[in-house]
Length: 311
Image 1 (cartoon, rainbow, N blue to C red):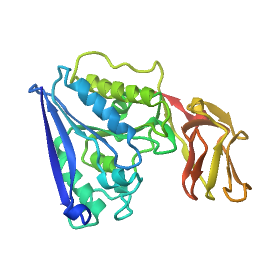
Image 2: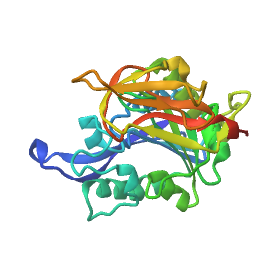
Image 3: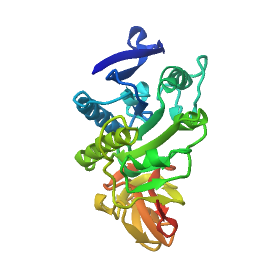
Image 4: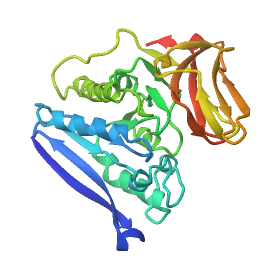
């Protein structure tokens, strides 16, 4: 097994006496013909659990006899990771909304352009790992075009076939007639060990599915696909007090169940109550602890359990 690390140069930044911004790309090959799998993470800087998933997977990969090649882009957005922010703090852009980018554009557009030129052309199949961020925990997989089987291999019980956002990395990948899936897993500092194990296991499932390693994928007995998915966002900023716990993940709650409340940190006055949109709401993203929240931020993400289908 051979491994290489190369740096995709982006530009020089003002800070650090002309800091050279680059993207680290790991390449693992075993000199046996086969598919090329691309794995990426941290397109949003506050989602760092996937980095540990990819690190632990890379350690296991060194001991595995596999075919083809694996490319790992652990940090797609270094400025955002450094600032621990969802968006690039330099140009305040969501990197995952500016693809394919431009070599002469904003910093985020330059990064996207480098990913498009130096990473995406090299791989055949793609898994992009996300998490819930600093306060939220999430657990589901988004299916790309002609990618249902690939997405199922990540081993999550619930999937969503609503497609990718235009100008996102995975949307661009699908436009190039390549399969891709987004695995939303963990975050909020909850159940890290479990989510890391699930992530590593899911990637190995993908490799089994692609015949890169021997064995059958280890999947749940039943997997389901959402048709309707809703983000419940805060109208007002304040302190959010959930009426849920981490054990509420994938549980179903009626429409009249109080999911949580926001109150003013200054007056202690109750500002906003949150309820489900559907008659039967299944939780796929939640804030399990008391935390600050700003107007417009996602509080909870739910799906309609009545329109879920078995796949």
